[in-house]
Amino acid sequence: MLFTEAEQEFLRSQRLARIATVGPTGWPHVVPVMYKLTDEGAFEFDADGVKLRNITAEPRAAFVVDGSPKRGVAVQGRAEVIGHERARLTPERKFSWGL
Image (cartoon, rainbow, N blue to C red; front, side, top):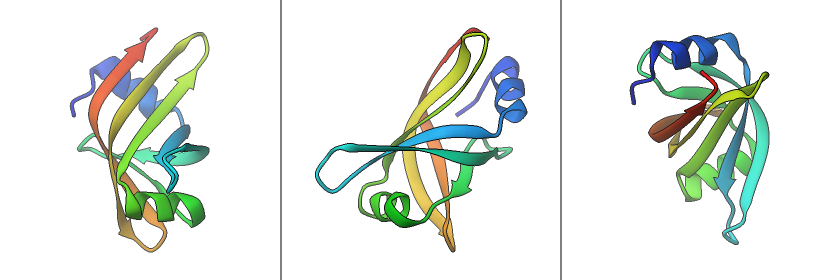
């Protein structure tokens, strides 16, 4: 997924996002995470406990990075475990505002 220059600049200036994973009952589980945007446009973050269990069972996830005044980027994609308590979300869809 390619981000515009404005989106990349915004995403690299932030550190906190919210990730929504799908729980075993189908309900979303939303939690804040610290992340790193890779050069390929994926998001890497720590994943333990519920996040790790959910990603392992169902990779579909959503990720939101927002800030003031009224700007942000939201993505939907698939998450995968890439190491010990570490995961990567690769965006398939994106939406941005205020950038």
